[in-house]
Length: 88
Image 1 (tube, rainbow, N blue to C red):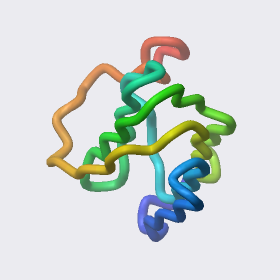
Image 2 (tube, one colour):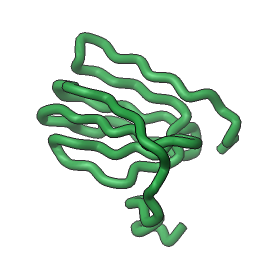
Image 3 (cartoon, helix red, strand yellow):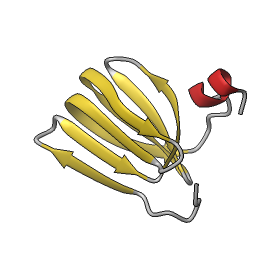
Image 4 (tube, rainbow, N blue to C red):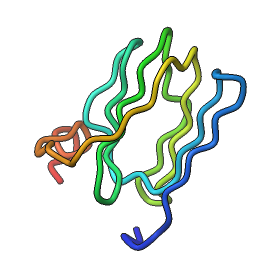
């Protein structure tokens, strides 16, 4: 994946969220998803959250459910789900 790719967010009716520039997903459940971007982490909070699509190759993530908040923080994760599953 091109690490210089742009990061963008598109949220439709607080129910369908599309994100580009994703490098990994660290944690997820129905209330919270922790997304790793190039230089930051994005926390998605809501209800009945579901990852519809995740492609690390293209950097695309699609989430459905009721989105209550999106917040950024500095990147701190070191042992992501993708790394744990595939030994990356």
